[in-house]
Amino acid sequence: MNKLTKLFVRSWLLLGLAHGPSSLGKVAPRVEILDLPHASASCSNSLNAGATHPLRSVTCADGLSVAVDAHGRILSSTNASTWVPQDAGTVFSLYAISYANGLFVVVGNEGAIVTSTDGVHWIPRDSVTDDRLRGIAWGNGRFVAVGYGGAIVTSKDGMHWKRR
Image 1 (cartoon, one colour):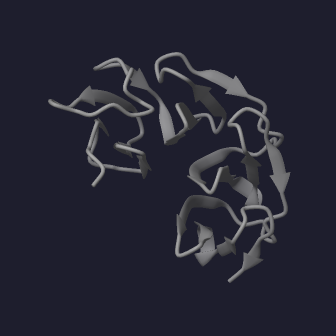
Image 2: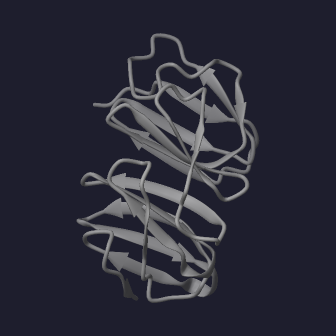
């Protein structure tokens, strides 16, 4: 069973949830990162207690934290305290991120979907929708992105999408 290592909280309005190997985090409009007692190591183990980052969504894999900030940009970090902006390959504001099967997937306005295998180099994908996508998750062998107007798009590989 994975252990809870860091809890990302500040307000009652939670915008997302991130889960990695040994970590679970909730993302609020302004995220305060708090240490939990007896926490195990994880890709986010060097977060500074009490540090504030305006993040919308965050995930981690293989020692890399990747986030979408309040301005809709992609940021990456190897220590979760110093964040480096990445070129997302889109002009649209981004909102949520997920990671599975070696692929980061980020969604946003106008159906924007971008993917990366390393969290640094991003490729725009055709989402088959122009709706505002606000959430992304992996489950049951596929990515599922959701948005305004009941928009739902799915993909087994993160690269080829179908509208549902």
